[in-house]
Length: 427
Ligand code: CIZ
Image (cartoon, rainbow, N blue to C red):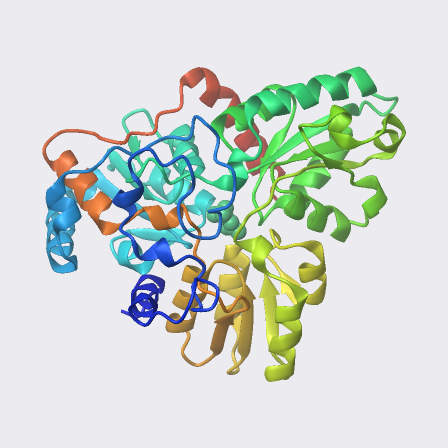
């Protein structure tokens, strides 16, 4: 298997300089994730290594030595045997951005929402092992049935973008907006602000939008969700990803001047009351550190090298990248666009490297490559390794549930309201 992981290992054997020179974004990616398990208050090596991790970032305790010392063949045998023993009581979910060494054990591969729904539909599965990141496991728990338990193999697999909007900063912003705009609806019955949170956010924020008349969106349905919001509100507070918010609102015809950025550390988010009076979409300052790496220079280079190349990027990319691409859409959109191509085509893709490489393997009739030439995987997905998977599965076989992600019902109930609104808003 030629995966991102094996490429990183190979590059590390032929050192030709620092990370950037050697074609890999951080040389310490070659470390085993458990080297980072004690006391590391960061996202670990990879795309979000320079993002500031909150002080209360979940930590992963050190897993037993037998998993840390096992070679690939032993871990493979352990994982397969545990899966066999657990049978239909278990479902293993793998996100599109997860590395192949882990995805090979997944019963389903998909985006966060598809995976949560898969778990829900597998009634006989008592254990849902989510090989993704923390907010995804929380969503699966919120949507799961009472008899199902959700497990995240490495608790340190968070999401730096989701962490850029914490509950107290959003509450503080909301209070300022209520002081500024009031709380009374206009003559058409539209309230001053509807909060919209991207799926990539904590359960606490999904709950916040649920109890404040708001809604959740994914990158697949952001347009219909914003339409839903504008039927009920005069403006939208969109968090945490400024790029998805900006790209979606721009495509709907909203001028950039009416999309101020909200920086939570500053009064009125760094805006004047006059600027906010005109605002249609207030964009939280968050971003994805994988998608922020894409730029128009990469697109120009791809077009020069491969005339006729089809450039598809994710809407978490900066606006100028989305504007320069041939199309933009969610992971599901990208996958379907490639699957639908009937003629051999060259695709330059702006999304996470593991997904792009997998698509290249799946569709050898096309030339498929990542716009970003530097191998820089999602740092937090990378924290999940077969060693952790073997550990959580063998603990389940022994009757012990470790690393359970459980959202308290007081939070889950309102989060569910926001997710149900999203489902009802779908075209
Ligand atoms: O929702 C997801 O799984 C993510 C992170 C992106 C997407 O476009 O599917």
